[in-house]
Length: 178
Image (cartoon, one colour):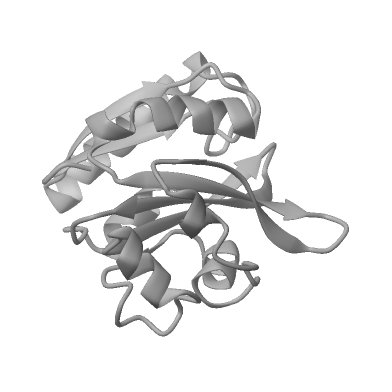
């Protein structure tokens, strides 16, 4: 997000406590999350309900509004159920060199995000969980927000949001997105 503004995005496939009811049905829950952000963390929010039931169309839509959200780029990693490895399914704002830097191992920050939920990496150059820190710095990435992607209540992968500036909110604030 920009400064103290966060976008809360949903396609309605995993509405908290309700399951998959569609993007418009998620609006009251997203508005409620926004109120929690404001009340407990002082963070202003806007909610976006996107009619994009599959991961590719969801990422494509979010990618198209990335500049508005103030991010450098994003990538969607999906779990290959045959190999149980994460594979880049879609990306925006990242160079081919960065996307093709090498195999992405199911370890470090990616594994932690899959198991524990959203996490932030405040400084990619100094965080041991980053598999390719030199490549991230060369790409102009400073911070990363990593959030599990759930479809119909099952974790299917991770979406990573990359910032050229440090994130200014704590992990406890990001956990409200789940």
